[in-house]
Length: 228
Ligand code: APR
Image (cartoon, rainbow, N blue to C red; front, top):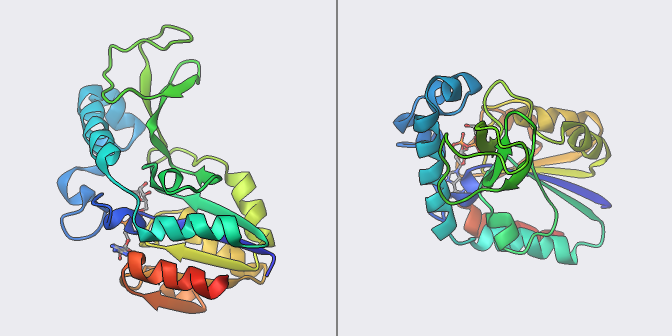
């Protein structure tokens, strides 16, 4: 096996104490997506959006990687072929666990972006609407997070990797949000073996050849050992 492509979702960080979106009591049960995760919501009420991400950024900074993150970092170090790790998550737990190359397709909580000049810089713990961009001084700073209706990052590169994958694995994602939910179809169209690791079946479970059910902190280390 020469190339493995892995997609992770909120489920891999659940056991690190970070809430998922669609599980019982998840983030989308507490906040309306249109208010806190769309450009329109941000334009309408930037304070509410900054408060939402400031709270998630503070929580994410206290979270620790779990055995699943650690196992994927080990896979990157020890797998003889090429490993591509794509995450929908905006926490930095993969990097904290030692993964060197992580593609953050939905951006990251620790990043700030200027909506005027596209400058990016490390986000402070708390952001607010009066902050000035360090490059152009405009007061149009926002979290470097990809909102609904916006194009995720590095898509061309990701589709290139999917076309070359021998194995595609989705870990801890519900398969509700595209384009990520369509990656399994893309990979299998190019002949990849596909496996879903999740606590319960995702919305696209039928498109996977293999499924491994259970908590990520238990299943992912076991699965990684089976690959090495
Ligand atoms: N181990 C493994 N899987 C788990 C665990 C666990 N301990 N806990 C929950 N899960 C699984 C759930 O079964 C579910 O399939 O994690 C998944 C979480 O699904 P979502 O909350 O929908 O998160 P995700 O799929 O990452 O959402 C995708 O939607 O809101 C947007 O941009 C946001 O990146 C996010 C995207």
